Length: 488
Image 1 (spheres, helix red, strand yellow):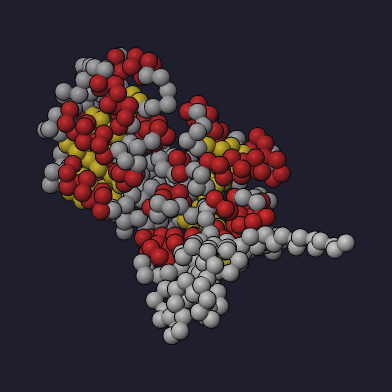
Image 2: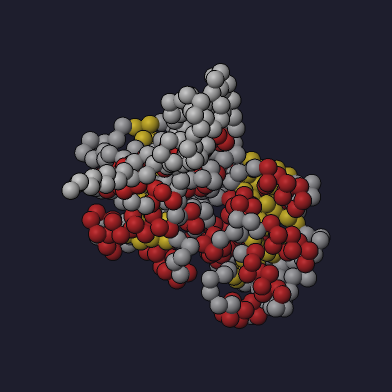
């Protein structure tokens, strides 16, 4: 099938050809005719399948030319990076038209964005919060809005934007075409589609939450954080890992890895880090340097897992397993884009096995495992880290089985102590010793307090010194006996 079969105008066909699109992807083949026909569309497609062009091309065709100063189409996306990416795609495909488009998002002052809006616009790409801010100030006129697009609807739900979406639906015209695109179709997205779409045509080109066929995936089982770092360092010695995205769970770990790599593994100019605490310009500059091939390694939190269209990313490394399982699909979707092959590597500790099992159920496939390469130092797990891992495994088992008491938290019973629910032997009673003598205050001879039932290793104690671990919980340090007085 060719793009000419969609009956697009010559300006758009020329832009498509100049952009290097040879033939439409599966989502484009199915969605474009439905959108041109005016249907509400629910599109389920993984990242890297061309879904942005699937709604941008018919949108440009329907608007055709600049029309006054009122907004004609609104595209909402959850993150600044995705808004910028969509706006760039609009600009690329509308290059031979006079259609005006503006991107607005938080993190920057609104002055320049307001000036661009006041020049007149046909298509607005926005984050929900910034749209409502400028609409409340009277800077956006949406009375003639004809098309509303929600992109990455699953992430919009995950990030808690539903109240803003409902407020936007209240202030824009009810008579409009609605388009909703998502990589997954969770229960939340299904509820949103029922509220947002009217008699939609559903387009699902791949099983929901599936991973790209062009991406090879495998897992390395690692015991601890230090071994993860050693493994990452060893992998980056391979020159075939020439454009790598390293995903982590927190900004603290992102900063730590960035400093380690810049100091010991790669040239300082070849590595960048982006996360929510980085300024907008810093994030934009880092992304552009990575896109242009001037940076080899980009360390990122999930702020960059969606909407970043960078061709020829050779490898994605999941340093941490994501806790929002659909984000695994979006992370590895950064590679294997536009029919390029890619590789996705995931480091998994004992505590992260629980999350990998959930991810494999979502993507409906088993991720193969590989042995840790030779030369990687497998470190001993520090005591505090091991305790934290065991406690997390306990918590996971309790979530699956509420009756599970917890192997890690199991309380040791002292000789003569009665477990909860155990029948006390005849001849003994609470508050007395086996010989029938009153027990001293404090619960046992010596006056020391008994350990509290159900006591367990606390998260706070994992970050304190180990001095308190040298004696049992509840015991007091022994004191030297007082010297005997000598008689005269």
